[in-house]
Image (tube, rainbow, N blue to C red; front, side):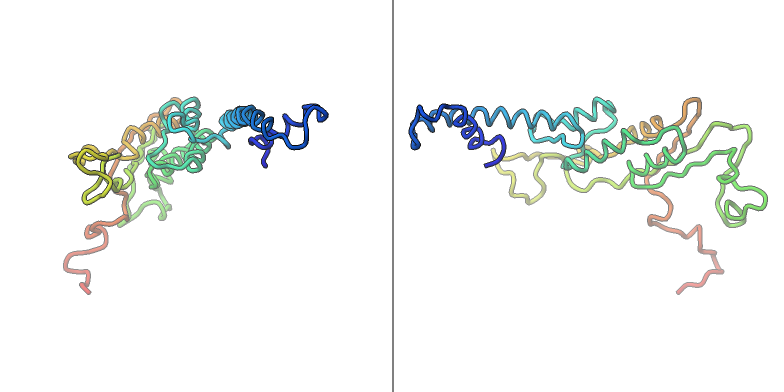
Length: 250
């Protein structure tokens, strides 16, 4: 017997009845009171559910048509943070709390927001910042055979940001069975013709632009470039570390 269940409610009702009115064995009375106990147990369960939905730490999506975590996210963040397909309550809850408490208006804040969104560290260049563009006696920043950026003391409060799209999602269109799947048949299940256009990425370019706009400082100008693949994640490096007629082939 747990607090608030049918047996608990039945015992509570029996305790307020005068004992001298009834015998010890009362099956008819117990049957009648059990109906009231069941109703009170349902009310108690609903009350407990409503109380849990009032806090981010305990809100859930137990009811398919009533995703309280999504409502909380919308109240705080608008449409900037939506639940991903198949995302658990725990993962979504952590993303909501992290986004609400996220630092703003700093370079690390923008970098962290883009990393959380895409999984890749962005490249941020501020033209007036020597650490980004290099300078005299700064060999770690730029030099011969090492990429750098043009600096300018005239471009204050501006930054050039390169963000990288996350890998394309694996799978097909939502709620449509895949090739040789046994979840669909003629006049049964969900099936249909589809192509790449119906597969939507979890992170869009609009999401990346929104993350930059939400973390940049007021009065600053950010030039954004969105690329498909960050450096060092595969592909040819012939132009970086191979010199024609000099490098050895092994």
